[in-house]
Image (cartoon, rainbow, N blue to C red; front, side, top):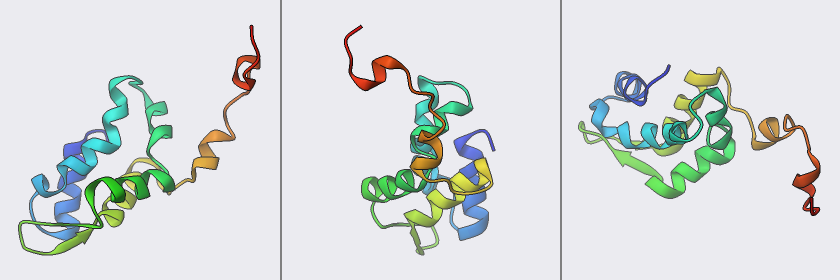
Length: 108
């Protein structure tokens, strides 16, 4: 999936309610596209810690149009799985960074 609206529509099909019930959460996951407009933006929020951060920001659950309480964690997991096919950890992303000298805090 490429757009937060598509994720929100998917959430509405899966959990009921309207896409608008979920759009803010899915937009948050993809906000990093504003400064890194390719797949690499996902390394900032598309992982286990990002899902828990979303829960901290949006609350444990959201009430949809149908009146059902939907766990934010389920919405985050759905978003990440739709984009990546699985839920990676932060470590899964970070171990792929190739260290450079400046990253160690040494003066150049």
